[in-house]
Image (cartoon, rainbow, N blue to C red):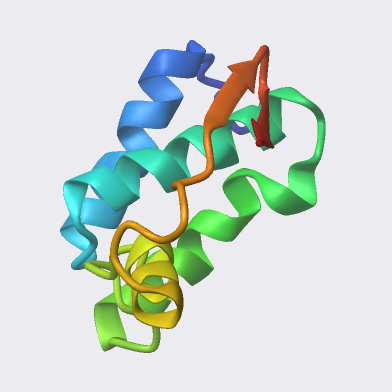
Length: 101
Protein backbone atom coordinates (compact mmCIF):
# COMPACT_ATOMS: atom_id res chain seq x y z
CA UNK A 1 0.00 0.00 0.00
CA UNK A 2 1.30 3.46 -0.90
CA UNK A 3 2.29 5.74 1.91
CA UNK A 4 0.54 9.13 2.07
CA UNK A 5 2.39 12.31 3.01
CA UNK A 6 0.49 15.43 3.99
CA UNK A 7 2.01 18.82 3.18
CA UNK A 8 0.87 22.27 4.16
CA UNK A 9 0.23 24.85 1.45
CA UNK A 10 3.55 26.64 2.04
CA UNK A 11 5.49 23.37 1.88
CA UNK A 12 3.72 22.32 -1.31
CA UNK A 13 4.33 25.72 -2.91
CA UNK A 14 8.03 25.59 -2.00
CA UNK A 15 8.35 22.05 -3.37
CA UNK A 16 6.74 23.00 -6.70
CA UNK A 17 8.85 26.16 -6.97
CA UNK A 18 12.03 24.16 -6.29
CA UNK A 19 11.13 21.68 -9.03
CA UNK A 20 10.55 24.51 -11.49
CA UNK A 21 13.79 26.30 -10.57
CA UNK A 22 15.68 23.02 -10.98
CA UNK A 23 14.11 22.80 -14.46
CA UNK A 24 15.48 26.15 -15.72
CA UNK A 25 12.78 28.53 -14.48
CA UNK A 26 13.50 31.91 -12.88
CA UNK A 27 12.82 32.06 -9.14
CA UNK A 28 10.09 34.74 -9.46
CA UNK A 29 8.32 32.84 -12.24
CA UNK A 30 8.60 29.57 -10.34
CA UNK A 31 7.06 31.13 -7.22
CA UNK A 32 4.20 32.60 -9.22
CA UNK A 33 3.40 29.34 -10.98
CA UNK A 34 3.80 27.35 -7.75
CA UNK A 35 1.36 29.66 -5.98
CA UNK A 36 -1.24 29.20 -8.73
CA UNK A 37 -0.83 25.41 -8.90
CA UNK A 38 -0.99 25.10 -5.12
CA UNK A 39 -4.16 27.18 -4.94
CA UNK A 40 -5.77 25.14 -7.74
CA UNK A 41 -4.97 21.95 -5.83
CA UNK A 42 -6.44 23.39 -2.62
CA UNK A 43 -9.54 24.50 -4.53
CA UNK A 44 -10.03 20.94 -5.77
CA UNK A 45 -9.16 21.72 -9.38
CA UNK A 46 -6.87 18.70 -9.72
CA UNK A 47 -6.45 19.17 -13.47
CA UNK A 48 -4.95 22.60 -12.83
CA UNK A 49 -2.83 21.73 -9.79
CA UNK A 50 -0.12 19.18 -9.05
CA UNK A 51 -0.88 17.18 -12.17
CA UNK A 52 0.66 20.02 -14.22
CA UNK A 53 4.06 19.97 -12.49
CA UNK A 54 5.66 17.15 -14.56
CA UNK A 55 4.59 18.77 -17.84
CA UNK A 56 5.64 22.29 -16.83
CA UNK A 57 9.04 21.15 -15.57
CA UNK A 58 9.66 19.04 -18.69
CA UNK A 59 8.73 21.92 -20.99
CA UNK A 60 11.01 24.34 -19.13
CA UNK A 61 13.87 21.84 -19.11
CA UNK A 62 13.89 21.37 -22.89
CA UNK A 63 13.20 25.03 -23.70
CA UNK A 64 9.66 24.59 -25.04
CA UNK A 65 8.69 27.42 -22.69
CA UNK A 66 10.95 30.23 -21.52
CA UNK A 67 11.13 29.92 -17.75
CA UNK A 68 12.94 33.26 -17.60
CA UNK A 69 10.37 35.26 -19.61
CA UNK A 70 9.19 38.55 -18.19
CA UNK A 71 5.94 40.38 -18.78
CA UNK A 72 6.18 43.10 -21.40
CA UNK A 73 2.73 44.63 -20.91
CA UNK A 74 4.01 48.05 -19.81
CA UNK A 75 6.65 48.08 -22.54
CA UNK A 76 4.02 47.36 -25.22
CA UNK A 77 1.79 50.18 -23.92
CA UNK A 78 4.69 52.65 -23.99
CA UNK A 79 5.67 51.58 -27.51
CA UNK A 80 2.11 51.90 -28.79
CA UNK A 81 1.08 55.15 -27.12
CA UNK A 82 4.33 56.84 -26.15
CA UNK A 83 6.00 57.47 -22.82
CA UNK A 84 3.81 59.42 -20.39
CA UNK A 85 0.77 59.60 -22.70
CA UNK A 86 -1.16 56.78 -21.05
CA UNK A 87 -1.49 56.33 -17.32
CA UNK A 88 -0.47 52.91 -16.16
CA UNK A 89 -3.52 50.93 -15.10
CA UNK A 90 -3.95 50.59 -11.39
CA UNK A 91 -4.09 47.08 -10.07
CA UNK A 92 -6.02 46.37 -6.92
CA UNK A 93 -6.13 43.08 -5.10
CA UNK A 94 -9.40 42.15 -3.44
CA UNK A 95 -9.03 38.82 -1.70
CA UNK A 96 -7.81 36.44 -4.35
CA UNK A 97 -9.04 38.56 -7.27
CA UNK A 98 -7.30 41.34 -9.17
CA UNK A 99 -9.05 44.20 -10.86
CA UNK A 100 -7.60 46.60 -13.39
CA UNK A 101 -8.80 50.16 -13.25
